[in-house]
Image (cartoon, rainbow, N blue to C red; front, side, top):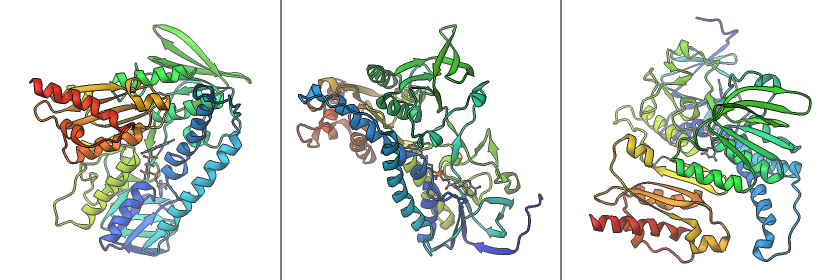
Length: 469
Ligand SMILES: Cc1cc2nc3c(=O)[nH]c(=O)nc-3n(C[C@H](O)[C@H](O)[C@H](O)COP(=O)(O)OP(=O)(O)OC[C@H]3O[C@@H](n4cnc5c(N)ncnc54)[C@H](O)[C@@H]3O)c2cc1C
């Protein structure tokens, strides 16, 4: 065993949760509510990614860009043109104020006397013991929830040129004149559009054939069209080669359509993904299996060690907050109810929202998943460009697409790209939760004129397809 410095105290707890972010806090609260003596270990800063550097700060700043974009369209709505100049320090200050409030509340929850909070790095010294500072903690059950960090990607010259990640760009107080965004996932697109709307010239370089390459191609293409309309340069199907720089600009060299091309900008946002935070935990001493940097878990969130669970970004199953919370709750239930059948993660209602404008929101199966799983389906879509309320709002990009079972019409999945997609998807999640059908969507009353009533059009088309069979 490796030496871990001077250790003076020994404590035992029923359950030890390592990491007090969204997944860890959900696990700790669930285990505590089941009557367990719970310790939370977090080296800080306390608050977790969602609050400190993820969902909440990004959504706070995106709101400023949305307002700016709408103000710029004043003339279209019969208003005198308004001149907007983004004050990035003021936008960042507003974000910081909100984040502080959210973080204070989370810290208060973590410091609740019903938990024992250790503010220290956790390091395993055996499968049943960790070292936190000068204390050894032992337990019969551990829940790992240490989150993720921006991945370091081996592109020659990138580290030397310097780049932002989502962790660092959220605090930027001077807007770059131009920004090269590496990646075409949600973080890349949300932050890329934010800076474009502040007046930065933005180029997005995406390796996949379409943006949001894990979703169906028509979704990525519709979003690409909307971003291009706003003046963002979107380049898909690129292979990043190297980065060079001088005092004035950074240049990303890439292969595109068989030719080497260059894309220059003042700064680079590297948004090529995140990797689990497992360094320093000494998972080898806990005898937990790690595969390609990921902790292997089963549906019950259990690792290769039956008494050690891993939840949230650290297992890289679905790095999304509400699913991290669900995983934390499942793991804590399984830890505290060993004599009952284990609860398992159910992916049927997995959903994701991308907070670009237009927003993207998906739930359940899509075209690619149905084809890959040889799952028969009926599908129908309807464009926002033909929907009265969307036209009144001046938000006509995108569509709603439904996937239903061909015999019953049960809703299997849905994709929305368009205004308020992140809100609209919840009606479809609710219908899927209750195993509802396209006919149910048609029968349910929808107020007129609302964005929500758009779902009745593809539902009607699916009911017609069912009637014709
Ligand atoms: C820019 C951005 C925007 C995002 N927006 C959204 C969104 O809109 N919606 C959404 O659903 N998801 C979003 N996400 C993803 C979401 O933030 C994460 O999936 C989620 O926060 C992960 O929670 P977690 O509990 O797994 O990890 P974290 O919240 O990161 O918690 C991990 C905790 O572990 C602690 N820790 C780490 N290592 C150790 C150690 N060795 N010892 C002790 N403590 C340790 C850390 O201090 C931290 O508090 C976004 C992510 C980013 C980067």
